[in-house]
Image 1 (tube, helix red, strand yellow):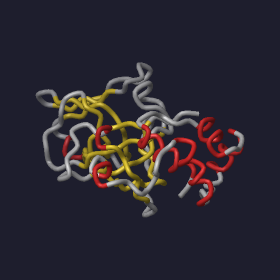
Image 2 (cartoon, helix red, strand yellow):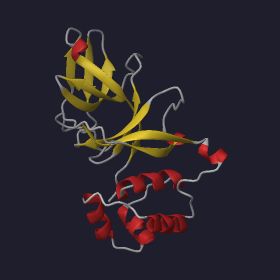
Image 3 (spheres, helix red, strand yellow):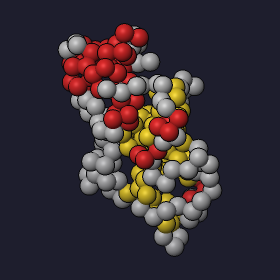
Image 4 (cartoon, helix red, strand yellow):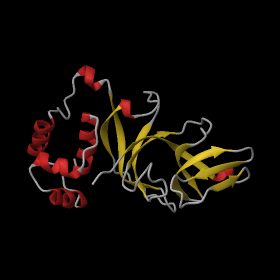
Length: 206
């Protein structure tokens, strides 16, 4: 397990964001060391996990039956970056399962498929910032819900944007006012491929 993955797990277990400074304090190292290890994709040792458990008063992986019922294990694609800017995504088969508190996921259902990816860019700021982790409810054929945030592919590029349907077009909006509103005509709408709806955002804190 990498340090960035550990931050997500701790944040979910204690129901509040954990930043690099707090993680460094729990491990007895400097924040700069944590930052460097995240950049180098350093693995966490067993002894470090024990220190984290003691510091936060949590049990990271051996949940009781009742507690485990409130946890969903979601595929996190560590090398998938969905663009909140000009449009880009990098696919990889590399993934890991992370425990996520179901209370964080809007409209959670055991019958739905979820995954987690990374956000890249600033067009959806301040709602979604560069480096945030996004939980995606995979599209199952439902109609677009107006003004919800979706991951979609258009013209072979991938975006994270708010979508709304008009009579004969789809409206694409960014939360950052520096980005203009775009539209896709009904004729071109078939070229838009929905990946899924964003149902939770885990903020990336320094």
